[in-house]
Amino acid sequence: MFQSRCRDSVTPASPTAPESPTAAVSPTASPTVASPSAVVQVDPQFNNLPQLLGEATVELVVKGSPIVIRVDGADAPITAGNFVDLVNRGVYNGLAFHRVVREPQPFVVQGGDPQGKDPSFPIDRLGTGSFIDPAMAQPRYIPLEIRPTNADQPIYSKTFDTAGITEAPKLRHTRGAVAMARSNPPDSASSQFYIALADLDFLDGKYAVFGYVTSGMEVVDQIQPGDRITSARVVSGLENMKLPGG
Image 1 (cartoon, rainbow, N blue to C red):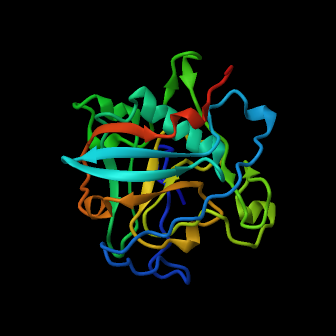
Image 2: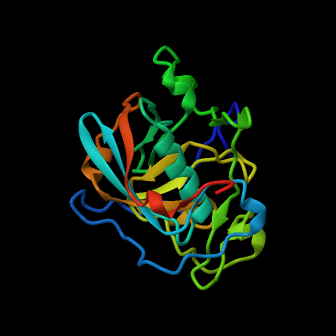
């Protein structure tokens, strides 16, 4: 199901499978954005990871144009906190989008492999790298974190299928959704993320959405493999970050 070499990835449905992505909406249409909700209480076992206890806004610049992302720490505090922390550390500056799937139907653009910081690293070999936490000198991985629509807390370390959950997640894979890529183990996400190019309902409950593109989807629609994130910055919401030991 997953790509070779244990790449962090998200897998499209087979073109002949019953479930497949819906057609992409117009590039000028606004992405679906969940309404704000009360911040969930995070299990103390995850206090060693950054958490976003609220919302933040992140701006990525690609080919001179901004992509603005609303990051939802209310419903995905660990996943969102990890992303905002990496943005604030400058981890994404200069990294490439190494995977772009638009055929046979719009799917995702994926980037965030730290190995891409080296411009001589081949683009086709990206997809296996993780963020190395300098404080620990080892990769930082985060648990799969998905909140069911009617639940007070996210489900951790399990897909909805594994957990026997049949309702939809609160943060869904609509066009413009931003989510974490991972390899087969549910708790293997680190720094790689993807942006949905269409509504991808069949990924709901399998991968962790943590935000939505609120402007700049026309930029996302033009991304090609090898295009780089010139800069990534936290525009607002850093005051909602809770760092380990803080």
